[in-house]
Amino acid sequence: MNNALKFAGLDYRTVKPYLTIKNGLIFIMVALILIFSTGESTVALTMLMVYGNIFVSYPFAVGEKNGIDALYAVLSVNRKTVVIGRYLFTIIVDILTAVSAFFISLVISIAMSKTGSIRETITIITAIFLIFTFIQTIQLSLFFKLGYDKAKLLAYVPLAGLPVVIILFSKLFSGDGKRLHIIIEWSILHPGIIIALIVIIWGAAALISFALSLKYYRNRDF
Image 1 (tube, rainbow, N blue to C red):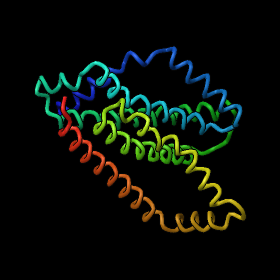
Image 2 (cartoon, rainbow, N blue to C red):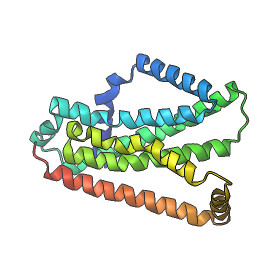
Image 3 (tube, rainbow, N blue to C red):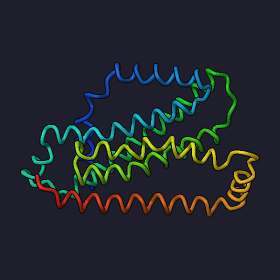
């Protein structure tokens, strides 16, 4: 595990040059434009998770461009260590992004004089966190199987399809809202079941993704 943590730190140092003030300012400007045009602070939270999602793919891109994976093979770096380290780096970035999103949401809500409980904010951030990390379980497996260049378009299909899913769900629950009301009511009455299902589905996706990534990466030739 210690080697995996060191590898996660190496991933951070690999992509650190991309964390520039210029990129940060661009993100803030785009986020502010979307927030004030839509009146919803959740837009910024979603954007931040998208930014984090793209950021965790940088080690694959940099590694492939510079032949770092081949170097790991020459140096006899355990491939399991590489996979564990990459997953650790990803979850650390996701957690930091979610925490940042929480504080940014509070600041935006205060600036826009919007009322909302901390519990609601945490619920929204948690939902966005689970959605994006679930998408990442698909992306990581594709990157380890095909490499960044071959997988990048395919890997971002789930992310690009997310708005479509949201629209379909909104249409499903549009109208008199009875179906949505029934689901919400049932969820309130059975919170334990809902939480258990979410944890099981998310955990299963993460474990399957890790197992596939390890299998794919071990079978690749560098």
